[in-house]
Image (cartoon, rainbow, N blue to C red):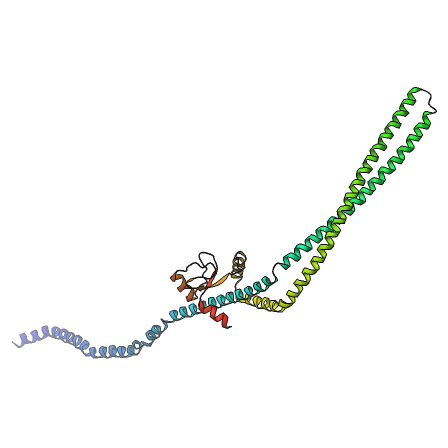
Length: 324
């Protein structure tokens, strides 16, 4: 019995060892579990401060409205620039209109003076041309007179030779030469008479032109004196307005200035920039739609009349310019 129990113990011994090993293995992880939890807790505790970086999101949320602010600032700058340009254009128009009024006061005197000066130059040229024609006519008359003298000398010579001819043949040839020289004399006398007649006509034309020239010079003196009186009265004012007009050019772009001058040149009254009066264009008096009026009042862009092409401004711009 003891043997059996001993053998059974011997047989069960390895099994018991194995069971003890397994129990140790099972018990070891169970003991280590709290340590793992502690490590996880430490990791969570370590990560919590990192997770609290919420202010970064708040900063991003604060930055988001900035583009809208920049856009508003840019729009305000554009409006200010357009407003300054419109004020400069309207001011330029006011100065140019005053200059036009001053020049209207002078009336047609500058044009009359210019016409008289041109007429005087034409009369002087005519007198000079007639003088040159007279010189050439007198020269032709002298040449024809010399030809007549030469022909008379030849005729006398041929007549003397006829007295000493030997035969009829020589006599006939000399007679033909005399006849030819006689015809030359007649032709020269005819040319001389024509030239004398032309010479008399040229002299008469010179007299008429000279009298007209004297009259035109007197008229020019009178017109110049009248013009100088008017110019001296308005010269200072006009120079000041021209200076102020040129100062406005610095605030206006070249393309707008070119367009302004073109519109002003084509307009009868010289108005290129007009304000809205009674919901209509101040230049052509056509009605302006409410939407266009609103756009003009916004000062976001330069708007022209769709009928006459003039640049339009509202009362705010006009009043601001009048105040300045």
